[in-house]
Amino acid sequence: MKNWVRNLKQTRLIKSLLYFVIGVVTYPGLVLINSLKVSGMDILKKLPKRNVLFVSNHQTYFADVIVFLHIFCAVKWGKSKGLGIPYYLLNPFTRVYYVAAEQTMKASWISRLFTLGGAITVKRTWNPEAGETRRGLNPGDTRNIARALENNWVITFPQGTTKPYAPGRKGTAFIIKHHHPIVVPVVINGFWRAFDKKGLKFKKKGTVLEVKFKEPLPINFDDPTEIILQQIMDAIEQSKQFIPPGHPLLTTIK
Image 1 (cartoon, one colour):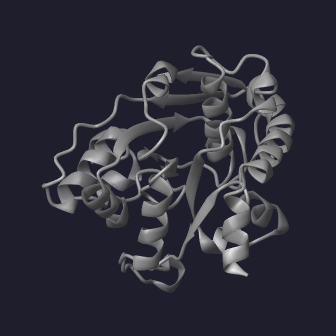
Image 2 (cartoon, helix red, strand yellow; image 1 turned 90 degrees about the vertical axis):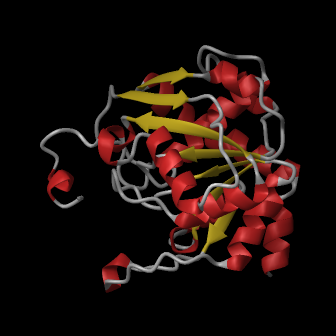
């Protein structure tokens, strides 16, 4: 069964149909009901179509990924200033995968459907609700991500949670250190204000949704994973230096 699902996710026809349907349904919420501002689309045009890892902060389960897919498809059609009219959905960019928690992707029929859009499901090696703080690395999950990078773009959220300024996971740094992808930092904002936690229902309309793609990081792959992880967290503006003055976290992070 797992092989069947994996093969189905790799079928361009299935992904194209799914991107079209999801794109048509979500476009109004991103561009018409809310306002989408994207910077750095020109950076995407210069990237190769393989071995590119996008590292981003995370604000909703699905809206973050969905807007990335819209942007990637728009760039494929030569757009550089925004989405414009979504005719790009007729021939979408499908060489993209995203990393998501297995628990999240099995939670509902909608999330299971989104899995076919290119989800690389990973098992959480920690459970904050149970008081566990272990952040190990699942070798099987690492292999799946590395395999996807061989011929695609991969989106990952190093924090593994929508909680702002949460610490990053060493697994992301491990993948970067050992597989040497081009690492593109992304900073998003406004999604937590516009959508619920899943990113499928509106909380506040008329919200400005911001997506900023930065230049690829100059990473020294010989550095320890701790150094690489810190570089990532700084780039996605989620490290301690970016916590606003007076934020409760400042009293707990030393």
